[in-house]
Amino acid sequence: MGSMQICGIALGPIESLALAVIVGVSIDYLIHLAFAYKNSIIPDRYYKSRAAFLARSGSITAAALTTLCAVAPLSGSKL
Image (tube, rainbow, N blue to C red; front, side):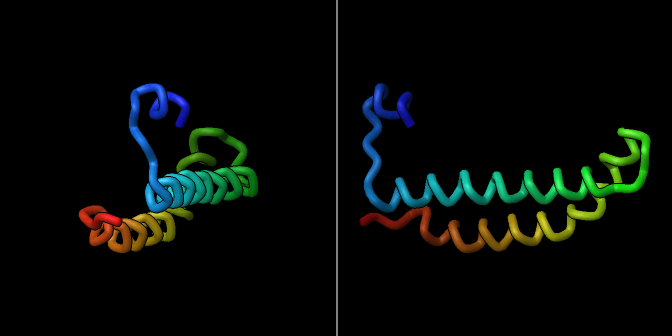
């Protein structure tokens, strides 16, 4: 956000809220993957990461698609 301020890009209330939501949702997806990785019973790191990805990929993809479908109509709006 500091580099956006230096470049002269002003953020209104809607843009600030959207930026906070996007960062929060991205961290949420990462936490789901990390939790699945940590709680996997497979000892090998390669297979453990694949199991975590396969276990959570459906829910993360669905959440990403619903977020995209909710944000897409709002992307062209002006306050």
